[in-house]
Each structure stands twice: as C-alpha cells, then as structure tokens.
Image (cartoon, rainbow, N blue to C red):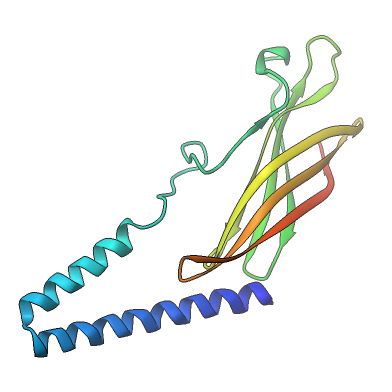
Length: 174
C-alpha cells in the first residue's frame, strides 16, 4: 500500500509541476514576450527528456546486471534451462529472479550458471538496484537464493532515502 501511495504522490507532484510550468510560461509571455516563453518551454522540455537512463530490452540493458557462477563452457552446451521466481510483490509491481542452470560436464549435476533480478511494473518514485545475488543447490531440484539490493525512494527524481533490502528463499528447477 505504501508503494502505491508513494507512486501516486510522485505522479500528483509531477502533474502539479507541469501545471506550474505552463503558468510560468504564460506569465513570461505576458511580461517578457512570446519568444522568452517559447525558449523557456523548450528549455524545460529538453531537461525533462534528457534526464534519466534509457531502457531497452533486458539483454541490451546495461542496468540489468548478471551474476555468473560457473563458466558456460563447464556445462553441457545444449542443456541450459531457466528457473523464474517472484521474490517480492506489491499491488503495482513485482521483483523477479531468473536463474539459468545447466548440467555440469564433470559431475553430471545441475549447477547455476547465471542469475539476474528485475523489477517489473510501476517504478515511479523508486530506483531498485541489486547489489549481489547468490544461488546454491540445496536439494536435487531446488536452489536457495539470496538477493541483496538497495531501494532508493525518490520524489520528483531526487533520492530521499536508500533502503537496504534482502530477499531469501528457494527456487524450483523444472
């Protein structure tokens, strides 16, 4: 519920800021002239569109960091599989962990190869960054995981609070 309220607060303040910008542009037009109002508007728009990182697909996104546990050449080449788990869920978003695993050539046992974690859904007012991911086998068909991350609470793009988060659990192999 707190995530939803924080997101709505960020959206409301963003809309209010846009309204204030239009009022300021109108006052500039009345007092200084149309040319100054146009320059002011384009200046604000250029700051707004150039701020922040651009996101693309997961594979091309430099923000999605992968943790590698064993070299890919130590597992059977055609045996890579993926396991997914939702490690946290709110009303408006979820955090997912993806682990790729394969059969190790020397022991013929499933081993984790790579892992990454992504926040899906509404992330307005937040920046979530995983710091470390560890995955290890517990039983034949389960891995235990630990995801350590930092959640930054932002208001209009300004970080107000950084909250350490740790998620632990198990993920089932299929």
